[in-house]
Amino acid sequence: MSSMPKRPKFDGNIDGSASLNEEESEALELIDACQNEIDALNEKASEEILKVEQKYNKLRKPCYEKRSELVKRVPNFWVTSFINHPQVSGILDEEEEECLHALNKLEVEEFEDIKSGYRINFHFDENPYFENKVLTKEFHLNSAAASENGSDWPASTSTPINWKEGKNLLKQLLTKPYGNKKKRNSEYKTFFDWFSDNTDPVNDEIAELIKDDLWPNPLQYYLVPDIEVEPEDEEDDDNEEETFEDEDGEDGEGEDEDDDEDEDDK
View 1 (cartoon, rainbow, N blue to C red):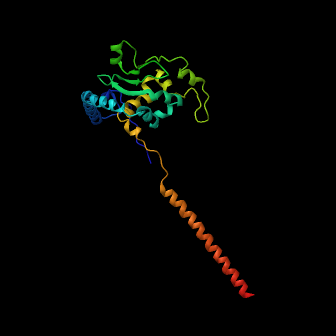
View 2: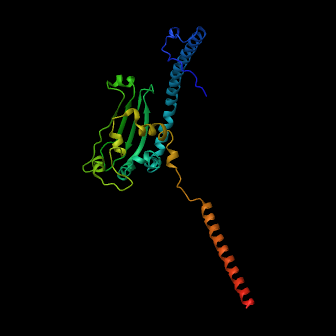
View 3: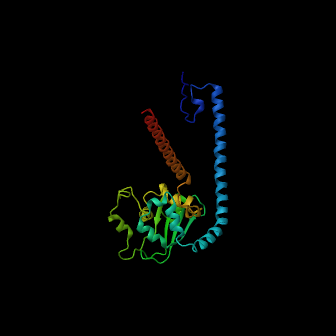
């Protein structure tokens, strides 16, 4: 099967392509004009979508605030949601889980223009680990956010943690021995490792999971049911046992009949 001939890469100069005839050149110019219209519409759509998102962010805010007040009535709501989340749970160390029992409120705030960045606020009750009442991780993802704060972009910042004496989990976890399931290496991060690390804000998967998955609907993770063994498996096992018993019984009866026939022959 013959392959189609390759066209020269379009460099923006349609008329200068010697291999194109007049009809093809005209068609490509029209296609290019259509593409420019499409790009302009896409840009306009993005602007309008941002306006809609800004509108609904304001409408959602009272609902989020009401939810936060109700969550305070449920013990260990946030730490349970973290533990049940399939990805976020992977960075939680046992001692960090104990610390996160003091987490009474989580909130994600997108900047007003949405596209420039956001912040994640972790509110804590009094706890034996650190003095802070609020720990904030903030992301500046384009020039608009950076210009307002006089910072580089993309960039992220984290509240310095005021650890109580002898309770610095970051130092303790660095020297803590791990079993076969969790071995500390250069790629392994715990929750407070992640919170304090600002080396790659654009590819911060944990922050994106909290902002786009856990924050919009934490209830789905708090209410994750325990995995139970399906009763069908037990029934199958019972059926297999009965089958083996029946086969043994039949074999036994067959042997008795053979023995009786041998005695008659004698």
